[in-house]
Image 1 (cartoon, rainbow, N blue to C red):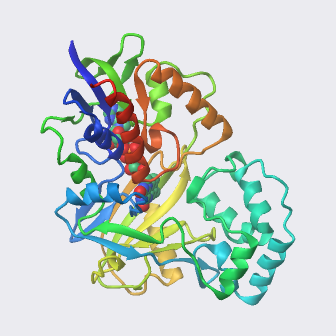
Image 2 (image 1 turned 90 degrees about the vertical axis):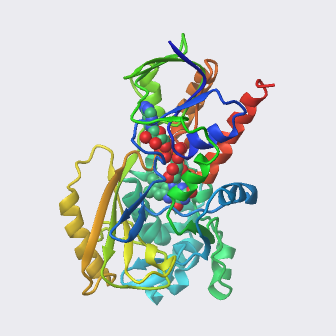
Image 3 (image 1 turned 30 degrees about the vertical axis):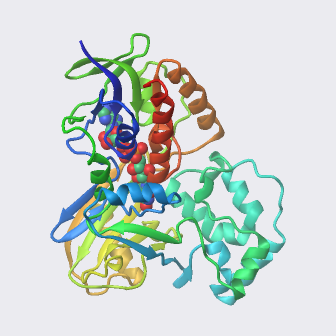
Length: 417
Ligand SMILES: Cc1cc2nc3c(=O)[nH]c(=O)nc-3n(C[C@H](O)[C@H](O)[C@H](O)COP(=O)(O)OP(=O)(O)OC[C@H]3O[C@@H](n4cnc5c(N)ncnc54)[C@H](O)[C@@H]3O)c2cc1C
């Protein structure tokens, strides 16, 4: 039987980052797709460069960015983000809660009144959190409808901290101060982006790997934890350590650990990439659409990153994981909605592409966090580490994926002598 010390599942950011960091050549990456990248792939079509939805990068740790950029031949730009919200025909700055003064006067008063008289009782879930922190006005005009469109679930099912550091918190003083001294700084005030798209970061992570490091079109199908054997359609592989970036719920199933009730739910996101014959709005990188009359929750402008001359959009539509998607019908609705919003005028659509990300945003609940923690301990006792955005059933960025993969490798490197 084939034997490998480190068997890595998935050639996305997490699997590749682990392979870079482990101080051993005795590793193999199994990838069920025919190409690397996971959700960090890029599509080149008719002169347009698109990712699997907008993938922009915010590095907290300069050494990680340096590590990647040193391994890239591409131009990487750092851009000061311009993100807006289209609310009832008014364009206001993101985040909504800090820019209510940009709303029409009656809407502004409504938000301010409810913000001041909010009921700050300790919240027990995400929905209660937005009401108790920001009041009914801000909650019902933006935070609830927007997040319901994105997560495609009842927000009271989500944990208070379901979005972690990605949620733009603001207190009353900060909100009022922002009326006069705008400070919309956030974790992603600037972002970096390579001219060739997000896949350039994947190529950077592959640069120092062995040529035969990745076995494509090969899925992990089941896992014998007791005997440390991974079953694939091409035969069994014995491992000492298994590092999986497959979605956690699937790993649990593949290992036979699944119980009657598994608390792992998520949404899926239908992404359209649209290329038009000429330029549209400039100076904006993405726009949030909280109103339910628009099918999408966010629209991004690739052409405003490198200032190219044809409008190039990504469109994100959240859906329940069991929803049946009518992709062609959704495209027609998206085009009509874009026209209504004024993004598209007499532009001609010259190229398009779609992809469904499933899972996309996992539903972080108290039960899901407890289950992940408990089961991860059971896996670790057998030398199995589940990492990554879906392996950890969490909300995180590619930088977080790299940090986590390195931390797991650091633990295992102590045994490498
Ligand atoms: C809509 C959206 C927008 C995002 N935007 C950003 C952004 O702007 N910036 C940012 O930093 N992050 C962003 N992210 C997050 C980013 O995509 C993820 O953090 C990152 O791609 C996760 O990498 P990963 O390797 O953990 O998982 P994945 O990318 O999911 O890779 C897992 C790999 O494992 C493979 N695999 C799965 N199961 C098996 C199996 N059984 N056998 C073999 N192979 C298997 C898959 O084919 C895949 O290649 C976004 C995510 C979404 C959904």
